[in-house]
Amino acid sequence: MSNLSLFSAYAASFEESLTDDDWTRLETYFADDANYCPGDGSTAEGRPAVLAALKDSVDQLERKTESRDILGTPDIAEEGDRITLNFQIRYTKTGLPDLILDGVETVDYANGVIQRMEDKFANTDTYLDWRSKL
Image 1 (tube, rainbow, N blue to C red):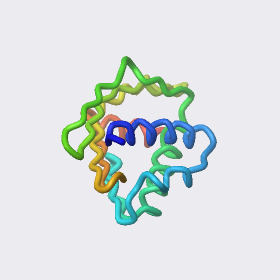
Image 2 (cartoon, helix red, strand yellow; image 1 turned 135 degrees about the vertical axis):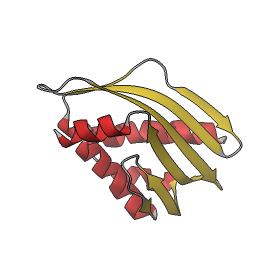
Image 3 (cartoon, rainbow, N blue to C red; image 1 turned 30 degrees about the vertical axis):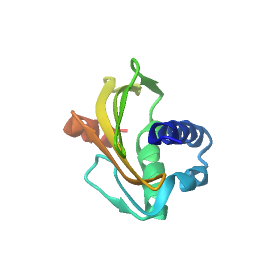
Image 4 (cartoon, helix red, strand yellow; image 1 turned 90 degrees about the vertical axis):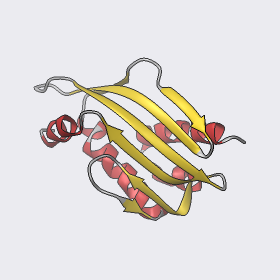
């Protein structure tokens, strides 16, 4: 299976976890010593910490907003063991202007599992400020 296929399966499982809050289904997608940089200045190291960081990221944003809409079709590319996903997401919350989050997620694979994942946002300061008001 290509890394792109693996990433597609991970992304589908992530969306399921977003819905039902069962983050254990993502365990098989990450290496034991995986690390994750969620774009807020923190880093999670090791599978349990990565899963906790994913849940925390969702708890700090998606769970506190009224809507999350992926805008357009994300641009995804595979080069060697790296998947790069460019995306734009709109978040809404009554009393706040909509947040349009422009991001790039890079995912590095090793032996069929995610070794490193990093989110970077074009508007990190705006994102963090908006999130702090939720």
